[in-house]
Amino acid sequence: MDQEKQPHVYGRHQAPAHYETGDGCLTTLIRIPVRIVVLVLVLPVRMIWDVLVATARAADRVLLRPLGRALSWLGRVLVVVPLVLLYESVLTPLGHGLRWLAAVVGQGLLWLGAAVFVWPWVALWRHVVVPVVRYGVVVPVVWFHRAVLTPLGHGLRWVYRELLIPAGRGVATAVGLLLTVLFVRPVVGVWRYLLVPLAAAVTWLVEHLVVLTLAWTYRELLTPLGHGIVRLAGLLARGVAAAARGLGAAVVRLVMTLLVAPVSVLYRRVLAPVGREIATAIGVAWRIAGFVSRAVGRAIARLAWHLIGAPATWVYRTVCTPVGHVVRDAVWAPAKRAAVEAGRAARSALNTARESVRQARRDAWRALVGGGPVPEPREPVRPLARTLGSTTTVPSAAPEPEISLHKQG
Image 1 (tube, rainbow, N blue to C red):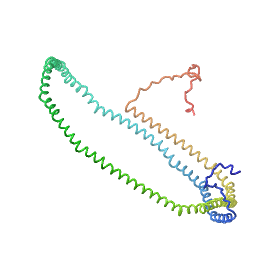
Image 2 (image 1 turned 120 degrees about the vertical axis):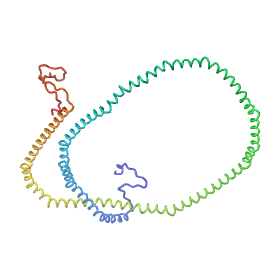
Image 3 (image 1 turned 180 degrees about the horizontal axis):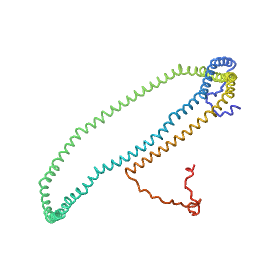
Image 4 (image 1 turned 60 degrees about the vertical axis):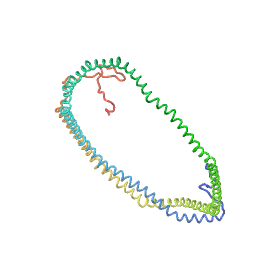
């Protein structure tokens, strides 16, 4: 029934974890002492392992986690809170002041740079360079082009079109005829009646004396010789390959017979069963050692509870808890309230000082660069209130400040 529930399909050389060989009484008699010996060897290791695990868990629960929380609280109190107070009380106002000073200095430097470098060059370009170039260069050049160059160009174009083009056509015809008689006809005669027959004779000599001789040598001598060499090389290669295959097969058969077969039999008949039995014995011994170790641990824990835990619990509930309540109600709560009130007073003083610094900075900025017009005091205008779900206003309804729910808290 158990085998039907297991969906695993094992191979030919693979056995399940609960594999038990049916070799008879001899195997059982050998297996039991082996498991007893392995249990004796594994039990101390398992107990030491359980002690280490329990010690690590107790140290994490009792020492490391409280120590981490204490260090976190200490870092927050000693580092984070002072840094936040320093940032809000000192660095933020100092940064605002430096930014305001940098803005003032930047505006001054921009004005000074524009007054020293930009405005003189703009005035020079606008009132000196542009008039000089316009009335000293552009206007004379335009007049010279319109009054002199344009009529001169039109006259030259008429001379070229009406005089030079007809005369050039006759001169070109005469020059072409003269060049043909002096240069083209002699070159054509030399090429046709001298160079072409000479090249044909040289080609016939090269073909009959060199090409035909080389072709006969290649066809009658080199080709049969090459075929013979290729056939001989193929025969030698096939012989060497056959010898190598025979030698390799002999070496493989020898290695399989003398080395692989004995090793395979040794592994299959000796090493694999011994290893499987040792692994099974170690697993069984580890589980039994775990049961024993847990039983010993429960006994030690119960003894420690009755000797140490129960008295400590009684002392904590009877003595420490009332004393702690008294200290909490009589000392800690008043000190906490006083610290909260002092913190609120300090924050109020810091907010007042920060607002004073901001107002002083605004006044200094208005004194240096000026500000907008101060609105005249007048009667406040009461806005008309809106009805819920509509954009219309109701004159008779009392106005309410339009403050979001998030800001109202």
